[in-house]
Length: 80
Image 1 (tube, rainbow, N blue to C red):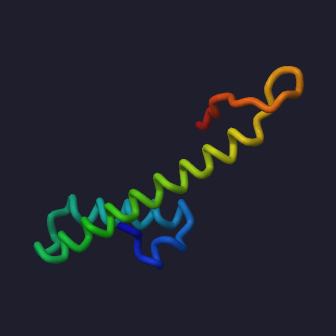
Image 2: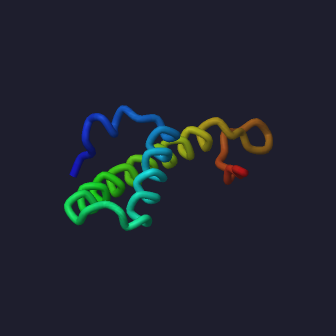
């Protein structure tokens, strides 16, 4: 299942911000059932998009890490 084109064009930060808004709206319980289902589906697509972006970033970081002796290697990246 591919994500909608508009989600595919979002940056990680944009997708995460929208996902946070969706979660807040769903948690409020104010959305009608049909809207809640639609929001949940979009939220799931946004979550998948964020996970893909994070994995791509992780792989890029692994490619640029240089191990001991100047040999390319893989080290765990620490964020935070």
